[in-house]
Image 1: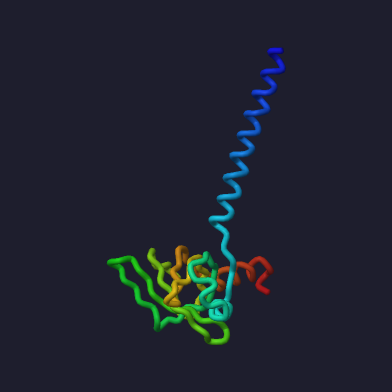
Image 2: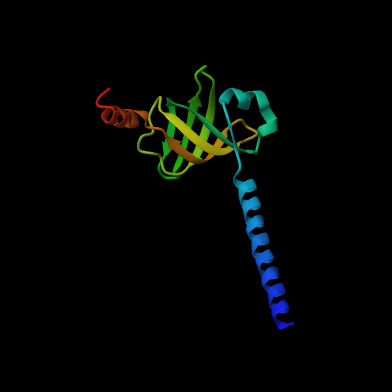
Length: 140
């Protein structure tokens, strides 16, 4: 009887641990899930995506950049290949390679005012990777 009781306790313990892990996975995935949209899609969807977690990218519009080093706040616009733009606000450190025409990737939310508030900001640096690729391919 004692062996049977221990097996039941062990099985219950394993079930509790597995249930806890499953809960953490589901809640972690749902809170971090966001989908990638283009500027055109953001305009099409309008209010239906306001406040939802989104990923968006576009080229930095250099003349729109306003950096406030006191508040650590970056305001700028991004544009797509068709010339459509959206305003972006980012509260964080301005990336070193933040320049006109570079591709910016952001996670954040679209506000009811049409401004995209970025929680994260990454600037692509294709020239660096293209040079490395050429070197590996023997300069081709």
